Amino acid sequence: MIFNEDLKCPYCGKENNAAELEEYLEDNYSSNEINEKEEVTCEHCKKKFEIEVEVEISPDFTITKISKKDD
Image 1 (cartoon, one colour):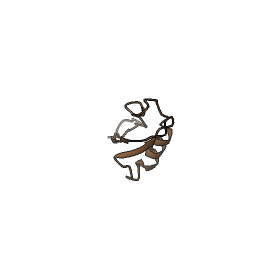
Image 2: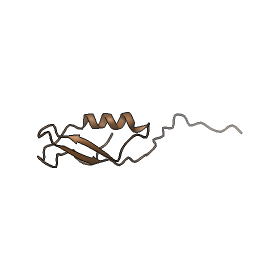
Image 3: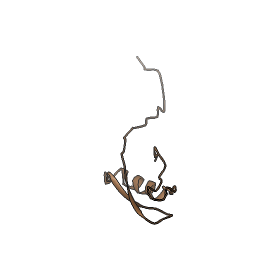
């Protein structure tokens, strides 16, 4: 999971560990249960704030074999 910016508290400005949020998003990614907004509690000041989550689906493909076509 990739976040495009730090998960900083809007109240105290300190950076938060995003491991729990990443786990939530990864667990619910395939089940289509991801909400656009998620409530997060700051580890430092304990105040709650919301983040907006935008999911971009980008399928990755791996070519496993290339061979000549038999005529």
